[in-house]
Length: 176
Length: 196
Image 1 (cartoon, rainbow over the protein chains, first blue to last red):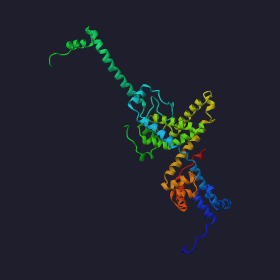
Image 2 (cartoon, rainbow over the protein chains, first blue to last red):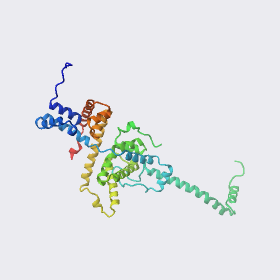
Image 3 (cartoon, rainbow over the protein chains, first blue to last red):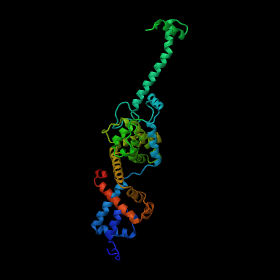
């Protein structure tokens, strides 16, 4: 185009095409003359109607995006996940001892049946916790009951004396 | 340390099933991606059932607490994650409605006359949300910002252009490219609502 020549005024169809392709079918924000051009063209010009329908279908898709949750809610939900993942050993043992604690959603599609809950299965945590608890209980019972049994067997007056008698009788005195 | 993490750059390409498996191994990035994909949907369900934003947010938090707890037990292929989320969210909302009206009976609370049709419609809403978000993610940052400002924030052309430091003509050019790209991306999608 020669530099001194002004571009020709766009036709109403060109105006409508330009507005539709940029702003879609929501005509409220269009300039008044473009809105008027569209109204005149929708019935008279099949191409304008087709363009409008095409952009309207895209706007329907854009409308289908659900509203974003608030950042606070996102943070809260993710903080809960972080807490679950970083559960301390004490919390895991507590979970093992109280497997019914915490929200329960009941049987759900897609979930494995059997013992379950928690990331990486709280069932595994509960088994570990129960085993550790049982081991600790056995250890403590040995400490308490053992000397009393020896005391009864040897007839000694106190647990330490009974241990001395046991060691004298049963342990070798000569080097092996 | 629980297992390996997928890394934020990888999670976006993972399926929901793969993300749940990763969450089961303690992967926080996978958890963040599941939240990004589905929190809006869960909130939408709870909002529709409860009609109260604060209670809906409380219910949505409970739903995701259940997701974190049960992710390690998820069996891929048995059901869609969105189906599970819908059911957990529905049950949680019923619990909240019961708490709100302890004397009401369950029939009064579960409002849909045809729950399966209701669930189907909600799942299609979730599908459309997922599809349009994925399509928007294909745009360049300036295209996405232009769509956000003009379409979702409903700014006037001049305000949006000023917000982006552009002329109105430049903004319109970006919007045209953005809409053309969205047309191209969405052309392959069959609108789930057309299947009703």
